[in-house]
Image (cartoon, rainbow, N blue to C red):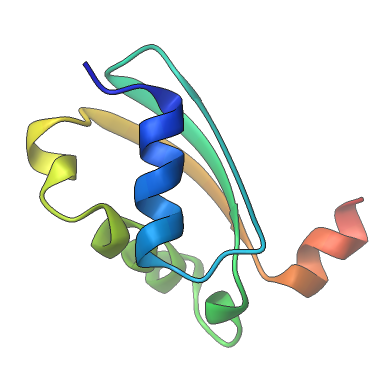
Length: 79
C-alpha cells in the first residue's frame, strides 16, 4: 500500500518543490504542489511534470491523483 507521505516524497524527489501536501486512502490521492518549475507552463504541462516525477508508480501503485498546481507567486497570492 502507498501512503500519502510516500507520494509526497516521490514528488519532492522528482521535482523542485516549495510546498507539497498529499492526502489519500492508499489508492486515491489529492495533492497540492507548488514549484518554480511551473512558471510559464500551462496547467496540463504542470500536471505532466508531476506525473513524470511519479513515473511508473502512476501505473502500478497510484490509481488516481487529483492535483492543484501553483507557481510560488500564485501560491503566495492564495495565502
